[in-house]
Amino acid sequence: MFRRVWQSVMIFMARSDAITRFMQKSRATSFLVSKYVAGNTPEQGVEKAQALLTKERLRSSLFYLGEYVDSAELAQLNIDNKLAVAGVLENGELDLHISVDPSQVGFAVDPAKAREAVFGIAKRIKEAAGDREGVHCLMLDMEDDSYVDLTISLHNELKEQGYPLALTMQAYLKRTADDMQKQIDAGGRVRLVKGAFVGSADIAYTTQSDIKDNYRRLVAMMLSPEAKQRGFYPIIATHDDKIHEFAIEIAKKNGWQQGEYEFEMLLGVRQDVADALAERGERVRLYVPFGQDWWPYAVRRIGENPRNGVLLFRSLFS
Ligand SMILES: Cc1cc2nc3c(=O)[nH]c(=O)nc-3n(C[C@H](O)[C@H](O)[C@H](O)COP(=O)(O)OP(=O)(O)OC[C@H]3O[C@@H](n4cnc5c(N)ncnc54)[C@H](O)[C@@H]3O)c2cc1C
Image (tube, rainbow, N blue to C red; front, top):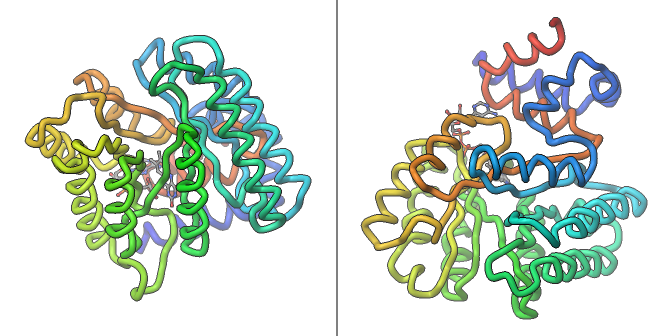
């Protein structure tokens, strides 16, 4: 009950334009920015990625903040920022994923232009990787269920043309086992998340325990001997340490070496768990958002655990 009230308050705070404007201008919230967000610019995103790799052996997935845009101008701003990140990848030892939400580059506004933009970003990432094997890829994030078919076919088309890329799939959707099998057969690269959306019982698992059970079934598919043989690359994206252990156990049993699969978590969330996995030699990546429009993202992270209230309180009143 308390958790639900807490989350509703945080969602209200994330959606309020007035609160967003106030928080993004306030100096008091700088603590939150540095916990969950890398900064405002692509350069600050890449700097954070470099620091995480050097100090903590953690790789990064960079994401320019801004979702579900409803104007061509905003879509263009998002595209420009993705291209700017891709533009600073050419040198150094980084192995970066660049995350793109289809809605963010304007699929709801002008699908042809958005498609062209995604191909442009993929091309820039491929050029930045050059002939370095396994370095940099375009990660397609997954949004609500109305975007699933579009995102998968966009992914498949890009893959056919040889672009380095990966696809996010959500354990809350019942269709995901079939979608996953197709990506395993094709030797793809998939990031599995629980899903940040809710769906009706005909298409989705609706309780946390059913979603977790499905997550485990999907992890078992991703780390099966068959998936390994096909050259599939599993990315297990959760903060759930019991699932991390479950995945490591299956990986060992089926002969996967560390680095042939990876874990991904969000910057600022259970960082101790990420560090402990990396210390055990596991490959770990953090999702590192950057951009001016950071408040809705940060407050959603706070809302995921009522214990984070202390963070909000500390940043506002210190
Ligand atoms: C790298 C990455 C990419 C993602 N991309 C997408 C996407 O493209 N599409 C999509 O729908 N969803 C995406 N998500 C979100 C995902 O679907 C879940 O909503 C989110 O990860 C929470 O689920 P969990 O698996 O961590 O498990 P949970 O069961 O929510 O959490 C596991 C444990 O971590 C703790 N925890 C979780 N969040 C916090 C927090 N903010 N602060 C403190 N403790 C916390 C919980 O208290 C619990 O102990 C992504 C998540 C990650 C990590």
